Image (tube, rainbow, N blue to C red):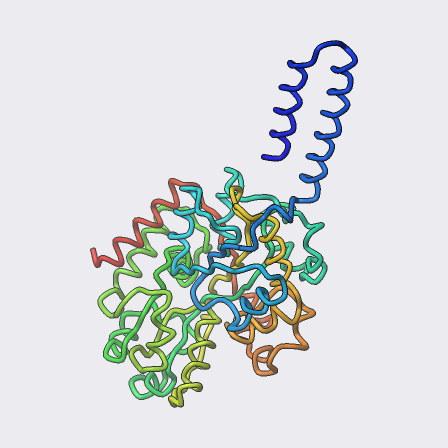
Length: 390
């Protein structure tokens, strides 16, 4: 916008200084040419005007090991890359504004309440040639959060369940209900596992909905009595929960620090991969409870005040290429939304139902929605009380 304002100012000053209609006419024509040139620069996205940098904010351990270097080599654009560990952190930053980030990966559920208040910039799909590769089924699901798929490009998706060390669990409970949410929500079961360690995700939008589903309720229930029942369920098992964290399980499962961990699907697979790389023998498995659970979809967004929106589009377009996104899935162990990437996936990844769930597992999963602020506060406060052991 700076180019266009400069053109208008120069034209106005020239017109005031003009003496006679002939000179004014010449200035008017010159001003029109300047405005046209400014408009042309704006229409082209002023790519040449952006410094070669893009600032990215993403979950920890959520990118390929060579992704950023490959993008920098191809484009000459330097990537400043920051990570976060909870959705609440990134949401608080986005609401404050002026983050300086050009690309932010954020959960679809959270983004639904940020889109209407102008936090994100609409994607220019004419700059996203890789959009053609996206799975229409995933785009339809994302429309629950982003009607018309205006602001979000799909990134990764998966389920929420629990990972467990099969050997440690079997040693304590030979007939452990490893296909049931009882592994997380039955005090009698957790009491026998407490010595080997049980962890929960530090995420109220996963923990509370999972507890509701285990009790036979809708994951998005706003019924105060049902929310209270979920809180009581969690309070009953709280004495046996070692900690709440969304990242520690990646190291603690392979190191035998915990034997059961509420987990996102990819975290279990990544923990297993890290154990193998370190030469640690651990028999890890993952379950979606037969009572049901939730699944989630993350999107790639451009903040409304992004300083380098053109570079942001180039970065997003790069991520959505089949070979690029396949390498990210191979690294992170999360399913992506690009079917054309499957020939480039490691065979064991695409065959793992924890990463790419079967239709039978998908039927057990509910999509969580954005709740009204008053109800969201009830859920958040209930979770805080459970964590504090109140």
